[in-house]
Image 1: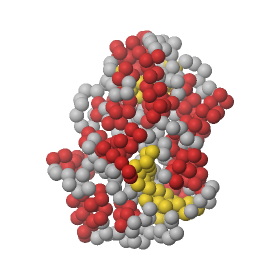
Image 2: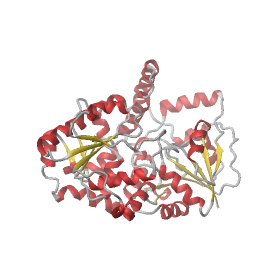
Image 3: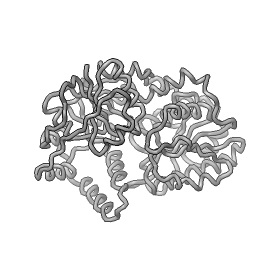
Image 4: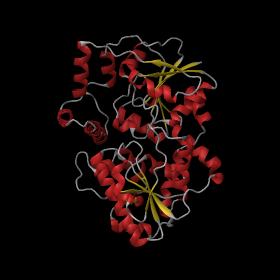
Length: 424
């Protein structure tokens, strides 16, 4: 069979490249990517895989009008808070203050305007080039967020077999690229519920296959006893999660707070801090580096967003040997639950609960539903509460979250996950 994988964030998603390499052992694999990502994709393209450029975007007055109309009147997921947080996040990334203000103004209008154009209606209205070479492809597999709307419009219009892997636990609650004409695969039953409920996708169009990222957990478990311990001292682990400069400063302040409380309550423990890989400026963590009881875990960075498989496995080793894992809302907080290390989300350190705030980041839909609501005792509400938690880390109640999360997932190898993905 000839499989077409439509990709984005190809350098950052090591697990996706592993899945494609597994698929190529049994099938012919073709990678489709946007022209601006060509160099990045070719740099990380697994051996023996073919690359084809997506060429569907059509410069046309109707498309320009239709895209602007969709921006203003698009139907959004029921998790409105998460959607607008993501929009604010994207708008904040430009360094041009005038452009940023324009982006924020558009978001304010979108918040007020009616929302009646579905993603399917939008795709049906796009005019595309029909210039991408789709010859010989038996099955297309896309990843959220969709890499190219014009290609998606063509694939669905031509009724080609399209399967969309919901790549992350927060994608159903913050993206709009969900079509009732596609078939979706996701991590587990609760995330299937999110796709159905938040995106109005028929339940029969959504299937559970597991998480590609969790294949690294399977690999870690296989070699855990053989991995050397990175840190010889006792420590708690803090995983940074924020890529917005203004909020990173607040996250760093929270990490400093953890270090200070640790000094007062558990001075024998060190705070190991892992910077957020996507945050471009690691100098923003400099105030942490100067603290005597802090060690920065920053040896995994490469020239781009890719991380070596060995560093991913090492990340799990560091989590597994920690006395506790702390975070403000990151997938690592979920991943930590697959070890015996208790995982805590920190729910303090913010001044405002509105807009692009630290509170909004912590209380994203996926954090509330899949972590805090499952184990409210693992949400740290203040420095005083943090001190109490640190003094009682052996309390079994803090590991109930681990048990609940593990019960929801079937951990699979890359080989098994790929097999199930292709056959779903």
